Length: 145
Image (cartoon, rainbow, N blue to C red):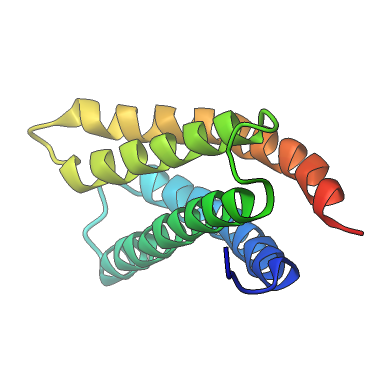
């Protein structure tokens, strides 16, 4: 395959992962604050909710970018997938992020379970991010000369 330099791909992946983790942290802080102030109707609460949605959308895009880079880079380098448990950890992370984002768009007084699905998924996502980070470190070591 005629692909861009793999080192270039891995640099994008490293930045995307770092930014995803930073976004997850910001979402945890802003989500915690919104949960604490959930009955507030002040303009600060509306601003914080908008920020939470924007950062969440950016995190979804970053995680999907990581998925594409991982698939393209692994297929280009090895010609097949499944060379480590990083693939499973990554796919679980992508699914959890998508479940969390979908649940977030459904949160309303009529659907209180969606808030708990969103929060519960994000707690599990912490473990998933840890697993994908640990397994990713091993993958990076394979690609570096």
